[in-house]
Structures are given as C-alpha cells and as structure tokens.
Image 1 (cartoon, rainbow, N blue to C red):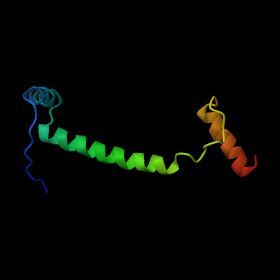
Image 2 (image 1 turned 135 degrees about the horizontal axis):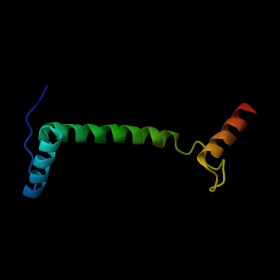
Image 3 (image 1 turned 60 degrees about the horizontal axis):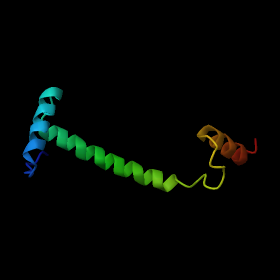
Image 4 (image 1 turned 120 degrees about the horizontal axis):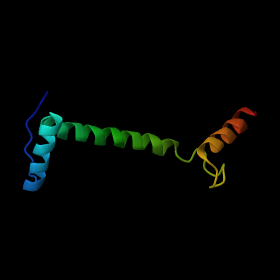
Length: 80
C-alpha cells in the first residue's frame, strides 16, 4: 500500500533530485523508496557480516591473502 509522505528538503537538493529523476525516468518518490530499501538491505547484511566476522580471527597472519586464509581454514577443518 502506498502512503503519502511529506519531506522537508533543501531547495538545491530538490533541484538535483528533479534532474536525476528526469535522467533516470524514475519518480523522486520511487528513488527515495529505493534508497530506503537499500539502507534496510545494507543494515540486514551488516548484521549477518557482524555475526560471522571473527570466525577466522587469530587463525592467520595479517599479511595473508583471503584465498590463503580460506585454504588454511578448510585444510584445518577437514584435515587435508
């Protein structure tokens, strides 16, 4: 369900939004909606990343590359 929302935005920002709207063919409302959806998705992903961050902590030297870290972890995990 779509609901009307009133925003107070600087005039210059509105002008930029109108130009971008014309350029992309999207309404300003659609652009704002997509922006908030992006923020929501990013926030959810950040939570997931935070949950798994640290799993490989203290398992590899700081100068190791990601592929090497992953390979070392899998080698240790599966005894390869």
